Image (cartoon, rainbow, N blue to C red; front, side, top):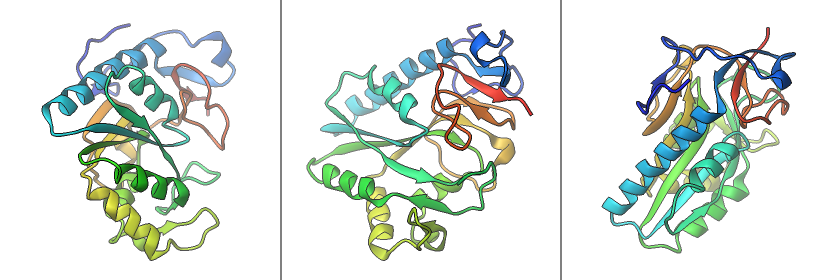
Length: 229
């Protein structure tokens, strides 16, 4: 099962070939990333972050999962880091109730402003934003270019984001955040975005498990699996 510690690991050319666990057999076509490999990458990624922290001027680490999808990933990484750190997060939605993104994102603002308040308490925070999967690229693009993309950023109710929220997102970029993704689906990419840390490159499949969901379902489980069509 183990392919070694070369990341990002390309699972398009060299997929895993393991049986689908019994609990997913009704729904899953195949396992895309098994649980032990997710844990192996989280250990590796935690070491990457720790090394960068120790080589830099930082006084605290702030890990920010984009919720809810990246929660499992962030917990797995943070639990393997022995540094002064804070685990925060804010909710971002780009899919609504379907499997196609229209390019806009919805942001729950409270977490953004709470994060800025926390960052302001430290002289040299190291900010890492974690995402479960990058496919179209719209979410990272909007976070990396909020003023340029402000007409595609909305509140949860559908109202256009205010200048206060856009300015807050821009302020986060002043902390030079590092962008981390567990998975990347380049076959779906519409925009090229910066990904500083990446675990696995996967085919153009609809995947669930380990935080990834379809309409809020199938998020549980300790592996990433492909949904049957």
